[in-house]
Image (cartoon, rainbow over all chains, first blue to last red; front, top):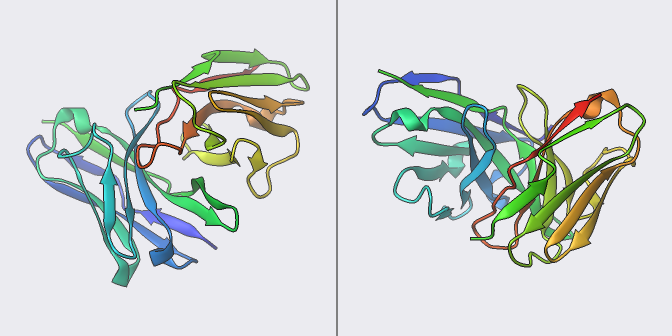
Length: 122
Length: 108
């Protein structure tokens, strides 16, 4: 079964660092882009950025450039999203998702993790 | 950045009725448009890619149409499990794949 398994909920204080993970299984991890999506409480989906684990090519939405770091370790089929100094406004659900790629070419995000809740509060 | 808008914000539909959701892009995205459903407490689920290609296992009551800047998702006969929030997403503007704000489908 193709799946993305995300790390568990986090509760942090402002200024702390954090790295959350997304482990792929059931497919060749290095062959598919992995995107990250933020969903703030009661709000819609926001595109953060995307990484190709095969060569770690990473692209960011301008809104998130410099605010987070996306990385991947292909040896363990895991992508990461990290913050060096959290703010209360980072409180949200974060999803990783795989970009569809098949004989028809590239598409939307076809496999999603269940999400990681990040709460930042003093 | 391509801005996506969706209408209506909320749609209340009785079971068995048709639901029509609209999505508009601020500039042409060709056919590079996906639809997702998100039920409360769940991750989004891909419904449609390439404007009109249903995801594996998606019932035929879901159909997508449009191109360029105007898109529609139609649910021909709404079932109780179809409630939730529906998002469109363009993936034409690499690498900034923006989402619409969502349409909430309530079961009347």
